[in-house]
Amino acid sequence: MAVNVNGSPLYVIPFGGVTDNKTKARTAVKSAFISNSAGAITVEIAVDNGGNPAANAYLDFIKIIGKNLLVCKNNQFYFRSFLQSEATTAVTYKIQNATNIFQIWEVSEFLTPKLISNEATDGNFVFTVKGGTLCEYVLLNMRDFYNLKIVENAKFMHQNLRTLKAINYLVVTTAELFAQAQKLADYRQNNSGLRSKVLLLKLIYNEFFWGSKDIIRTRDFIRHLCVADAVEAEKL
Image (cartoon, rainbow, N blue to C red; front, side, top):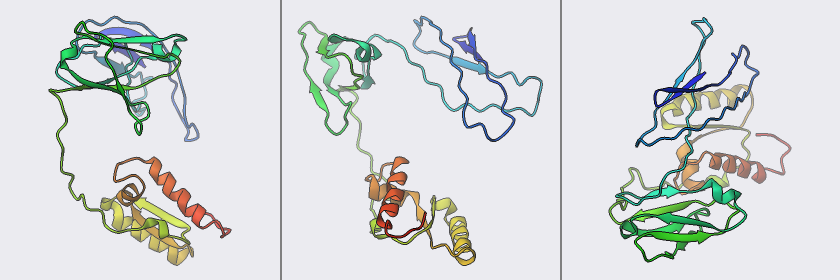
């Protein structure tokens, strides 16, 4: 797998082919350093199929981590420094154009955000924090406040999923596949003797995470079912 950055070869990552379905994961690590003065970074990845036209490769995601000058222009943004997590002493952040900054918050713990105070008076925003921890910050710009958006179907139907019990075959699906999921659940209930239930994924989000999408909440819901039925020697 050849990686090019800004049109220049960076390195080749050796990835062998997978010929069976037992391989869950495979890793390969390469590192390189580039200096980029442009406003954008272009990444190109080319895969060598070894002459096999039937071979396929699937890219999950690309993540670029780098250092950038902190300048407040016309937008709000998040920032962090991995040097802070590695430092054994205090670390100082400096953001230019403080007149464009409304507020800066530490949001490492999003339930308990902390307002950051400016230690400078020279037109920059400067603050000092302890090292040894990776912290997340958000800079708010007065020119880039987000507008409220009315969510479609914002009303939550009464569902009370926490009262569900005695289920040992659960199908979680979307509205588009609900009919097929119900057909599968009915088949298992009629032919396998399993007490079946079909639930829309959005209902789990509504009850276990205020409507926000977080797949971990599906795990929380399933755990709740298992705990609620702990007296039964059955598995979900």
